[in-house]
Image (cartoon, rainbow over all chains, first blue to last red):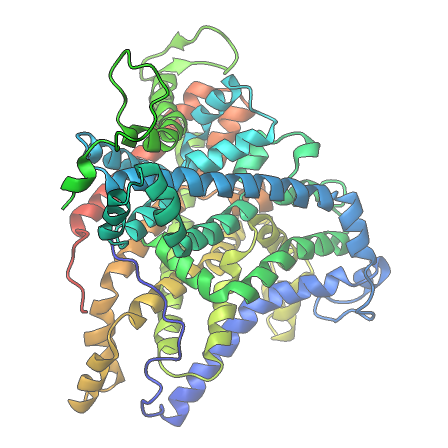
Length: 291
Length: 307
């Protein structure tokens, strides 16, 4: 259960002898081809997003647009796809779920890592086994529960499901908390702090790196989530980014240049976040996936 | 070590509630929200699902008709239901390609390379993208006269163009390819992280002993990342059983691309056969648990690592 972290610093083998000429060019050739395979499908969609309807139907997909400042498709996609509403709904759900996850998760981790009690192994086991249950399989039955609570078609359905099905975060918190020395807690208790004060004043501030990791990986996951909003937020007023884009295709099925613009609107925030937070994202993804 | 902390909270703390019954220990209050959510949204649904799977129910009626094992019999005998398992095989085979590609680039980029961080970023980036956006990008790529056809034309392979998503013979391959495009970055970053956690001195020692690059891969890198590779295979099995987003968004399950989860979704939410859909979900859940159990048996958590 070790967390492997990706080393952000320079390559470890920088001092090693260079490869022979052919091997080196093979290596770079393969890297360039792979990059092209990743980037070309995205770049052609970007091209399409800047083309006018006439231009789109007369030019090939690999031809760059004539006018890189033609933002008309973006404007159409933004207003007709109600993307502002999508971003707003996504943001609301994202913020509430993340704040909730941090508190629910750190409190649970605090109980598990700092208290000893009879049923601890059972509780830990419940969390462990739940991590193995893939969320998509249980939606048939989960839907009935969410429905009986009257939450279907309210943003709360997504919030409680993002909170309730999150076990990886609790793991990350438990793991990080066990690296915080207990002597700190004990000193505070001697100074007269009660257990909740210890959590709030000592543990929570020291948990910042773990909280950042959880916020990043969970934030990306919620932004990209499709199945839960698709199933529970049926009303167009509740469209999040994923479902707004998905439902945009219906009426605009034949106008690829507008769909391309809408797709780019959804991708852009991811690009920005990735460029800004690269290092944290690599670490977070590695920590989250090897659980 | 914990003796001090096991003491009840200091008496100085005000106790607002009247003490008629025994107080619930503090740790249960800390655990309560997480446990309540866990039980409500994981354990109760799993329990209910097993219960539904032995009944015929449309999700609305107040009564459910018990039908014994009928739903399970149907899942395994009706071709419409068991055929979707075969579609998983495409994704399973594709995940081998994914692991191989990811491993190759992880090894290549663990050695000094120009623009290393740029290549790493490019290879990883697709994993972060929104699934619907990925679906649309590839719908655009695969459409007749689209990017793929044009590129094939430029390469002189124009005769090989197909209805990439319309032809049942290749539709699953196209979708599995999209999956590889989307998830290779994750495996790649996991492998790269594992390779970099091998201490550098081991390579230096190997260098002094005259080991070449193949030896280094065979005797240092391969054993060091064995665990993460096996983990990736396990994830590949459960992942390929639970494929949903890409085929649902791109083809809606048409042209023979219906996967297990799409079939379960339609059975439950379009045809309102909750009992039958639950039986499918129980079968899937048991398969995933079985795979995980096998993994735990084969790879105990505390396996010694190189470092």
